[in-house]
Length: 423
Ligand code: AMP
Ligand code: GLY
Image 1 (cartoon, rainbow, N blue to C red):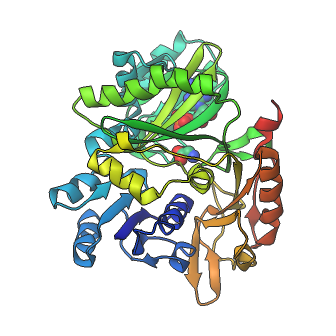
Image 2: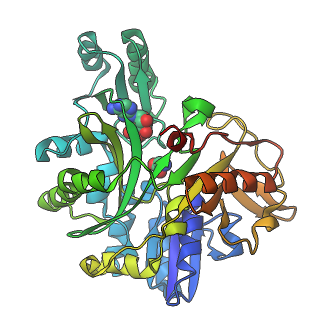
């Protein structure tokens, strides 16, 4: 089968790489892809938001399945466009992707169906927000309703900070219309864990757990980013906690979406906080995580195409997911200055050192193939993943491999995986 993957990040590189291991996959295409993806698949110069062009291409090339990696096209309805044209596609329709696209929607859903999450209030104007904040307890969390690349969340220690946050989101509109409505949320403490699942509308299958490091700097300082590194599994997400989440969060969420007439097909990503009062939902995403995928897929033993097809065909109840009894750590190599200002266009040296090294992977995010070779082309440039027998070994291996590649403004965190060592 020919498969088309839509997206251009490290997540899509990992998906393409994993699909190529399936004996059923004849060829993989990626739109628009990146420098690393172009070395293993055919990159197609169509943007992820050009739905009709993507569908035209899938039709013309005889693509058997299109896999949507990114959130924007999902929320924008790319799956609906493909389905209307009779094309097979993996991902939720717009009416289900809203679980990520609108925080107000997801909070109301959790409230209606009794799914544990932080207490909150949805507000639609700066005045309403300020009035609410007068009587709140601190710290408190402000979230832009819409998509903001994981950056529209402000954790405010004091009333003054929160009032300034309302200005940033709702008056200056730093995240555009994503801030027209905001969610004001109780601040929770505990361990964070990312749990990805496959869903076919009725059945949910949980993948192995992971933990992301969202802040730009060591020691969880600096601005929130898309994610600076991950490890898998999370030692805090025990079998007992998984069972509890299955009963209180995972199955109830899928059932709630079906009951609302929004059956969820695709990858449903649960951002959880393991609080003293039990696991609670921080956020939902309607797709694979980036860089969670870069530690989860290298540990997965199933044929990824088979799992995607089971989701699309509604036969996921016949699939058991299998993950290796090992661990993985991914360290993101970024351009210094990310997530704010940074330069691009620097040649990346040493990429060939990953060739033929089992258990070491270099997934490209912001890179581009040029006449000079592969150059940097974004904030997050590469995700260096290594496997190990346990998390400690995987971490050592990943930090060893981080030294194999170089570019002028290379920046990375030195403490990815610190959390599991504190245990
Ligand atoms: P989100 O995009 O909703 O996952 O938020 C980004 C990050 O902000 C999360 O990974 C948490 O570290 C933090 N965060 C979000 N909501 C809360 C909350 N209610 N309490 C504490 N931390 C939060
Ligand atoms: N790494 C978090 C996300 O993909 O949203």
